[in-house]
Length: 220
Image (tube, helix red, strand yellow):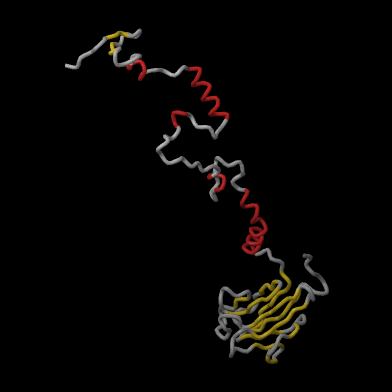
C-alpha cells in the first residue's frame, strides 16, 4: 500500500497528500475559467476574425495552421458568402446572348429574297441576309433546296450582300463540277445582281428580289 505522508482535506472536501502537492490536484484539474474572462475572449474573437481562441490554438510541436480566406468569393460557382450578385458574371456576356437570341428567333434583318419560279420548290421564297448566303440541299445552308437532287449538297451557289456598297453579288460555289447560271448564262465569277435577275441551280430557277439598296438600307 502506498504510504501517504500528510493527508490533507481541501475546501471542497478533497483529500490529497500535502507532502507531495502544494494545492489540491483535484481542484487544479477541475478549475473553472471565470465567466467574465470567457465573455471578454469571445467578444474579441467576434470583433477580430483573425484572432484564435487559446483553447483552439495549435500546439508548438504541431504544423502551423494555414488559413485560406476568400475561397468562396474567388470560386467560379455562386456563393451565399459572396457580396457579389450571383448573376453578375452573366452581364459580361449580354451582347453575345442578345446576338444568339436574334439568330435563334430569326430576327436578323432581311436584305432581299430569292423566289423559286421553276422546280420542285416553285412558289417558295428564301430570305437573304447581310454577308454571304450559301445555296445547297443541306439543311445547314442559308437557302435550302432539299428537294432538288440536281443541286449540290453544300455551297452550290453563293449570294452576297455588301452593306457598305449596298450591292448584291452572285458567284459559283465550292463545287468543282456543279454549274450555276445567271440569266441562262454560265456564272463563272462574282457578278453583280440586279432586281429581276434569274439564277439557275440544278432544276430550280430563282428570281432575285432586292430589299436593301437604293430604296432602303438598314441602319447599323
